[in-house]
Image 1 (cartoon, rainbow, N blue to C red):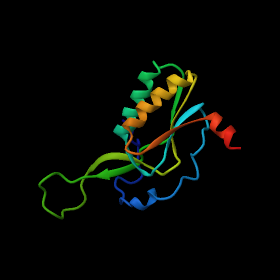
Image 2: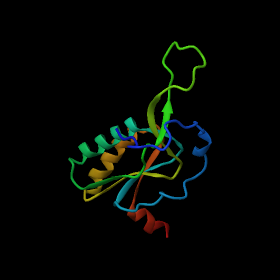
Image 3: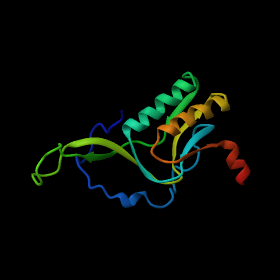
Image 4: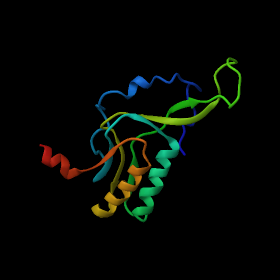
Length: 143
C-alpha cells in the first residue's frame, strides 16, 4: 500500500468539494495503449488502488508494462472507538487519492488488448467509482 514517505504536514482537513467537476489534466492516455478512467469523483484509498493493481497484474500474468496514474497523498484521520469528544484530532488512519471524473487511474501496454481489457474490468470492480475502459483508438475516433 502506498503512502508518502515524508509528508510536509501530518494532518489535513477533509474538504470533499474538490471532487466535483471534471478533471482537466491526467485525462488522456500518456504511456499505455489501454487505460481505466473514472467516470465520477471520489476518494480512492491506498488499499483499493493496491487491490486493483493486484487484480490486473494477475489477469495479465505480469506481462507488459503498467502505470498507476494516481497516488494516495491525502491523509485521513480517525479517532479510536468509544473515545470522548475533544482532546484533538486522531492519528492518521489511511491515505486516499482524490479522483475527479475523467481521471485515468491505470494504464497498460505490451499485453493483448482483450487480456488487458479483462484485467482492467477486474480492477474496475475493486474501485469505489464507476469506471470505463479507454483505448488509443478512442482518441482517433473522436478527432
